Image (cartoon, rainbow, N blue to C red):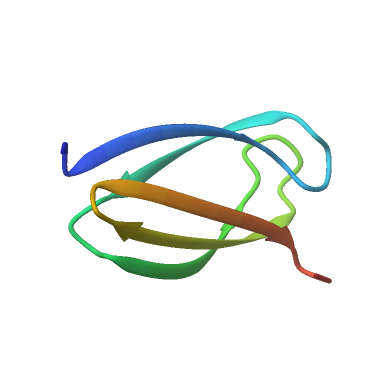
Length: 62
């Protein structure tokens, strides 16, 4: 597994595709990143298990 992976997701606010670069050396992550298009804060939850990256994103109100 590559330690840095790129994943494309859709912003929960504007629906535009955004790109996340994930550090796979950290098995559980939780942080807020602003959308690259509309600048709204996105809650990002990442878990990695058995070389499988699971990503959940949510708007600030969810």
